[in-house]
Image (cartoon, rainbow, N blue to C red; front, side, top):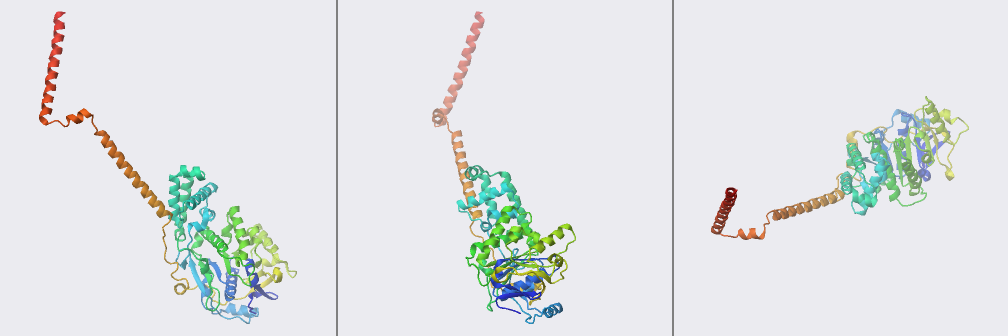
Length: 495
């Protein structure tokens, strides 16, 4: 049943295999809550890992963490293995690295503000077009002036500097309004309260740490703890898109390798596209379309195919569809859309079967020889080999302590960046202004106490001379007054 160049997914009228050479052609796993998507995701992750392909997957409920512990087959697992004739079924365990943007349930993952870029950051902050334009100006100014944007305090300091230099900046780069800067600052505060301050900074994630294999040749399964992250869906979706973009930028072209270099499972994929502007959807489509040539497979996991834009859906070749419920007109339409994405099987109606599938059953269509999609088959998914269900907290901590990246990302690095540079400039400006103020005050004092030359000369007389001069002025004043009175009296008598 198990083959070296294929992943065994389950049994329809025949074994359903995902060929490793088509693993980078992307895929889609859909189905209503409780229909078995998580088990299917675990089966696929185990299959890629066993073939030496590293895997990155978001763990929304914590259930996927069990791949790091030796399985102990439960009753339903052995029964299903027997039902599909899976004679090679055995318990197994897979190498795991736990990650967490908040650093609580795994190694911290960080990215710098510069690496995130203005487009993705605008999406995360939910900025309008005008505010996004101001943010683009901020990034341009930082680039032109050699300012490193590493964490949130760097970006805040830069925005304050832009506001103080608004006239100069507006002349060179375009209008920078106080209102837009204030809106961005408020959005940054909201983002910080959601825990993003832990995400932005250094040491930034090295993509190569997601592409490790162990001594037995198994690919490490990197699991992102996303239960807490789901409370900040924009942060979650933007982070995963950033990671895809980083993979695209960092990895070399390999064409169509014998097996993928990395497989990426994007759970709750609808969060990436909810209320997303067209420019962002175009970005996702571009990355998904081009990252295949880098040897990366992207698998979207969501409840319904209509959650994925058609331009992106067209890039997803390997399909696993669990049961959908069709109680409303919208749900019935979604069932028809899902059915139309499969190559029809003359033995049954795909639209009817989608609503009749039991737990652990799925409609499966995978790429076959020459890259042609297989005819859809009603498939019972094989049981996982590792533990099904979450690890205990102490088991998770033991794996984290012994992981190959232990100690690499646990300590925050705070390099000299925009915040420090602008703080020094502000201090130097303040000191210069203080020096100028002191000089102005000194000059004012000197002007106030500066006297005429005669006054300065009199100020050099002895006390006796000063007294004689004062007496002479007094006598002169009295004689003058007497003379005036005499004249006035004579005039009066003569009249």
